[in-house]
Length: 290
Image 1 (cartoon, helix red, strand yellow):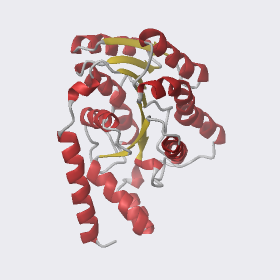
Image 2 (cartoon, helix red, strand yellow):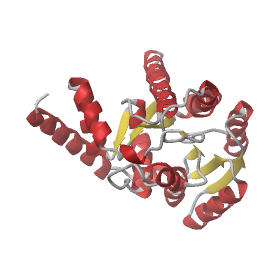
Image 3 (cartoon, helix red, strand yellow):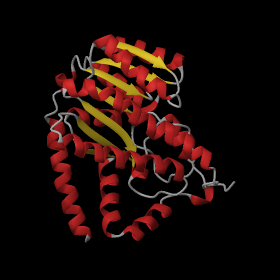
Image 4 (spheres, helix red, strand yellow):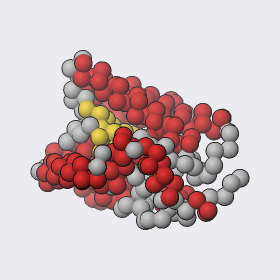
């Protein structure tokens, strides 16, 4: 695809995106019942605060109870209709079901499921540890599936939404994150397929796959900032765009939009060129081979 064609496509996409977000009515989320996983820090925490300002009910999960307590307190200060938490690790598949059961007990239903948690991820050459990949798949993929299965009956009843927080690494092969990338590609395959089945069955549950680039969260900064040549995008804005996309029932969100969208266009037309651009965008010399 020529540069001019890419520019035209991006311009049209940006215009459509801008129009849809400008008409986004914040009140549409008032009173909505929302589960957010991985919400003690980073993007998940910021999503909880945005939803609180919009007057939603929120149930948040993560590993660390003390952090969750602080987020819940802040959500109530910001105007959440209600705010609750459950702490635990998504390595335990029972937690996924328990969180959904808690939402049913608290509210009698569910309008939005935001799947955002991830397991520990390193940024380095793949060391051949297959057991690590298995564990990461359980946390980053299988627990997403388990929560979705548990939540679907309530979401079907409410005509609700599923938001799956994924990554550019789930669309494009990026060096030094092979295990993480595998889990994100799995999310794309499963949820894109599930979306098709819901449409075929005329089930009114939307699935939004959120394809994120480098976001300046605490975890990302600690893990990859020494390798990235450019700063990450703001987590607060990213969190808001995710919520908007889910509320507007978008198929996919790209954020930061231009960077991610152009990368995906190049992938389809010049994959080897994209691979080269990707490698050259990293300070590879700062990655120490173990």
